[in-house]
Length: 130
Image (cartoon, rainbow, N blue to C red; front, top):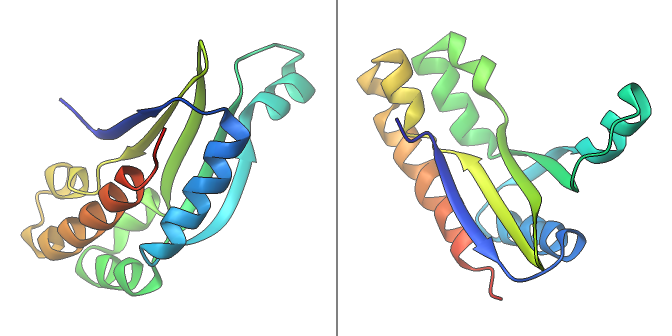
């Protein structure tokens, strides 16, 4: 089962995070949260992991339509976009496929919302260039 949208670029993580924020904004999403997973795990567990940042992206009208159609879908919000170091000068961008919401819930009323969100996230990811 594929549940993520994935893109790889030849840039460092910090630059990719900045570019992804801009790309999400251009696709109509705001970033509500930013979690530096590497720093958090180092501070809490004293473990070293590759650089990884989680951006919590939201397009309010899509979020509203989703929770009207399926109130429990809020557990999947906001849309997380992960930017992580893949080594060798490569960075991977992953987002949960919004179409997965339809599969998980079986609610066809989420179809339009999931399709719109997916197209917007795919466009944001595709706009990043090496």
